Image (cartoon, rainbow, N blue to C red; front, side, top):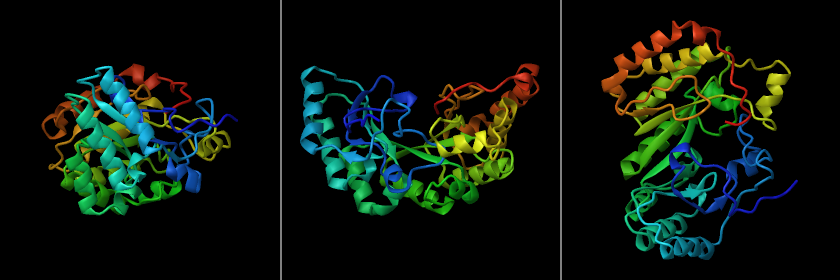
Length: 305
């Protein structure tokens, strides 16, 4: 199997499709330590090669930034690539962020992926250093608010850990985009998945939360479970029901933006403030659930999340 170097960019959020992509780490540290999350096949060969966790030399990253600056890529958002760049020592990451701000003009946003474990290992002062350096937003996979599902999927953090990490990030001045995976509990834990996820979102009130629908990835452990009949994937209509239940059970304090910005999903509503839009969104979802087309719809045959 081909080994991909850390400078190879494997994934990035859809919202960063037109951003400057600067790799700072390769792979995912959690993947290397434990085998990774059970639903995830990223860095395990589905992109044409395995990418182990590695930290790119700082001088290489700064050289990349110099190239973008010399070519006048001004005004573009910047995404610092890698499964979890927040695993870097704080001053290492802060140096990169500061250098982006120094060398490239009018950067509207600097972002990266983050793991809750990485955030919990940093002090409040370290998080403030990253915010003051110019890190605007991180993308973090909550996936579910259910401790049972988090443990089952080997996320390595429970709901209290996610709440603590999320609040500390936002208190430091860094925006937070959380991912929720619809269908992650299968039919057995569907209701628990929705209710507990709504509780965690209510506690954190993140800047944004985004829905992703579970699709099995060849090479992931859950792929084997599905093939062996140990895990039952939800039908499209039941995936939409989960979105409905999560939105319905949010607390009245939640003002997060909501996005369905992924091909895996079966509905496409968006909101800039779910507190203001909740009734409209619930009505839209109710009408969708009553639609014979979604009732009869078949699952998308996607092999990537």
